[in-house]
Length: 268
Length: 183
Image (tube, rainbow over all chains, first blue to last red; front, side, top):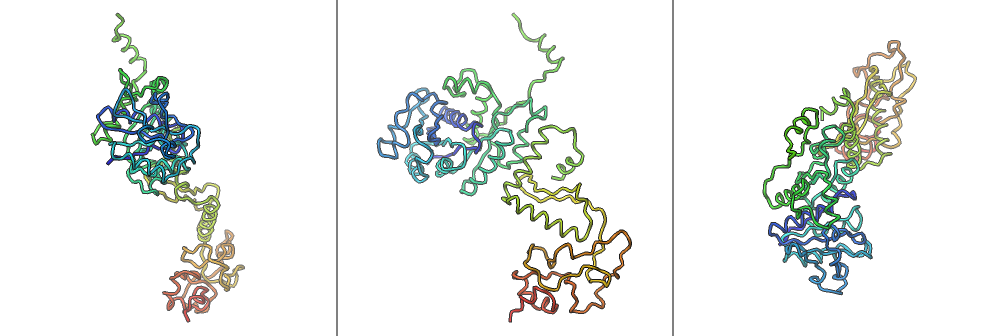
């Protein structure tokens, strides 16, 4: 039996797809069989973030229409055989699929995978309803900004109303220097407001952009970035491991610290 | 939550992080309680009316908001009092306004235990001179007095009235009792 986890946020652009792609890959690297499902019909992006866009042949809609078998639609990742992607249709809209159909599709997959991660589209309409229908757990992704937190709060309410009780929080794109300067909410601020357990904090990292440019999830990079390590830690916590949160306090940039750096950095 | 309240009155140098937290608490409290703004406004007006019957409020400096903290939502009101009004439960000969004897049109705030009446007529607005009404007392009050009883006399329609029939039925003028009399 799989763990069916929906990755949602309410607000768009906070990092749901990035999280789904990286978490999926991180879990697969730990030996778990993982299926990631793109529930964003019409505006699919999970294939792009995984670098699998050229390999999409059939989509979830084709499977539901009976035009192909489920196995034919699942895209296997050549870099990591434990990971498969079920792509969304690009030429349809969120109303192309009904929640009961989504549930049918996901239930057909539970026997073969340890984890099924569903990448939820932004919003709270049909796409959201489709994405949460089979989920037992949810990961709420938010950034420390007012609009994202407000939407996350609404989504938490909707999830609880839909009987999804295991909800965890991922705070994405945090900028520790801004937090210190009191220009951004801290992790504790957001946690106190949303009042759900925290499972991960991911710093704002330029490597995220580079990784999506390349279609290569952060966790696969040779030199791990902070964001990559953070996603890997979330995967470990999902597995039950107790992992301390990364120390993201910014390095001091005062005169003396720079002087010290000047003396200690190797030039030759 | 007390700490945040104190911070609101004695703010440290304002920074955007504190601002955004305050704004979010307010906004989420409203979102979560799902009170439409006009309903919230009516509630606010009514509460202020009730309080104004007893004390004079400083309307310029008052605060009245829904706030949320750590998963709990609360209605927080900070109503600076200018002075206390003398509450006159019985009409005096000099009082211009009189409490109505007819039952109120409809209960505007069913939860409030006091019998409802319009705030304008409830307490005569006293000028700064000492009150002319006699000291309110129940000692020589007759059961048929015009004044509404201080004890809970629930307005028509609540179950309390029917179960409390014996108590409120004695006060003949009580509007709730009239409708609550079972037979």
